[in-house]
Structures are given as C-alpha cells and as structure tokens.
Image 1 (cartoon, rainbow, N blue to C red):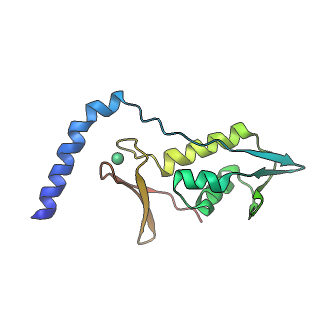
Image 2: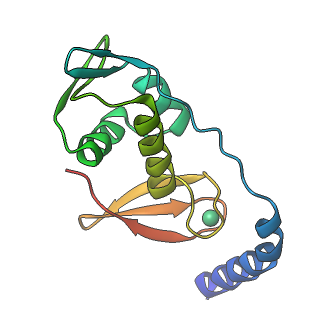
Image 3: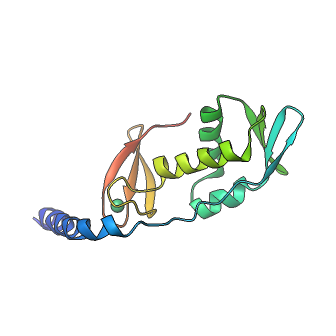
Length: 139
Ligand SMILES: [Zn+2]
C-alpha cells in the first residue's frame, strides 16, 4: 500500500536525521515584545508583528497570554492590552513558552509546523518530519 510505503520512508528519514539534529540546535529567532506600562495595564504594541513572524493568529497568541498571565485584556488597534503589570522579561518568557508549545516540533525541534484541528482536538503537525502531537486548546 502506498501509505505504508510512505510511512516507512518517513520513519527511515526521521531515524537518519536523529543523530544530526542533536548537534544542530535549530535557533529560531523568537521576536521580543515591545510595549509599555500604563497605570495598571500592560500594552504590547507588536503582537501582530510577532504573530506574523510566528505564523500563528494573533488571537491565538493573545488567548495563550491571557491564560498564562491569568488576566483579562483586549485587542486594540494601537496595542494589545493586558490588565496588570507585566515586565517584558515575563512576557518574553511566555512568548518563548508559546513557541515551544505551539510551534517547535516535539521530535525534530524545527519551527515548520501547522496547527490542525480534528474532532475538537488541536494537533501540531510538523511539515519537516511528519511528527504530530496534540496541543492544548485555548478557549
Ligand atoms: Zn518535526
């Protein structure tokens, strides 16, 4: 069967690539947040830019950040608002966490992944090695 054949090839390839990928640490340039504090609010001004670089919907990153920071917020044209004071250090750490969780492949650590939804479950599908892993859904 064609499927079996392809699957075997994929495994072979994944296996061959294994020792190499240990030495090559795929450095993925994670963009840094820019923003400011305004009173009791934190405004990120480059979330749409970040979402373009990460190739993920801005709203998805926004939902992730809300959950991670355990706060509420609002997506506005001039910037993304989070209630509370969050340092850029914290925000950058969260973006890194997002990248690890929703972008980098669990197997080959490459950023060439897509999020696919099937029967209510979201999967991270790697276009480089074919690996697939489920990720938590953000509501
Ligand atoms: Zn992969």
